[in-house]
Image 1 (tube, rainbow, N blue to C red):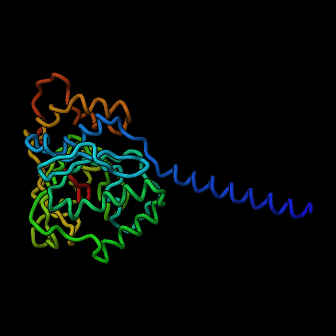
Image 2 (cartoon, rainbow, N blue to C red):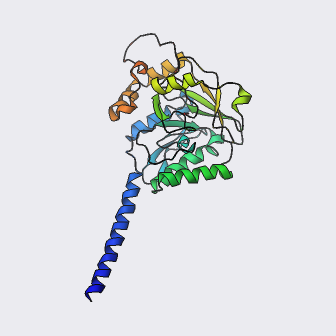
Length: 289
């Protein structure tokens, strides 16, 4: 009788411990949500002004993934990814979900039916408790098998936000950077760098990684070669300065939440300052869309 009680108690303890462990693992996949109004503003900052009012906006539910905050009518979709598709690049292991990624991105109808799908699957699986290594394996397998289709029409993904924190060169490693790098990505399925003829130099990548900008404006270049490739066009100095100025208060709010969401000092816009913009570009590195 005593042995039976001991066995039952042991089983109960094991089941309880297992449940607590699974719950604990699920909790490690959660991220601290942004204030809702700030998340919506940040998401809309990815779009040019004329597209913001009628775009569909999503916010991230830590228990479900992305959900509609406002239904739009113009065919554009915008949101802030906290684990982006670039985390699925390369062979390096995704051992944890970072708390500090900010990836404001938008898609037109063509992109929403193709490239956007992986972002939503990533967010949903993360919310359900899928571990990072397994999630990356699943998403990479879906890309490899053609589960995610290329856009059927020409179009563009806008990433015009004044702030981006994501991986510098995810094809190689998991280094991240915070930068102001407004840009537009046009769908370029199976277009290679060789065909385009340009690529960021090692020196440019180093400047971007260390300082959050490039010293020279790059020509358009290709990232994510394959069915889901993009031709990246970096905004000019005047356009970037105007975007930074427009979103000074939003940038200040983000900076108060996390130190790593503060733009590098030389890139940070000065409230009310009338200084001339520095003659350099805050560029995007290969893979850091």
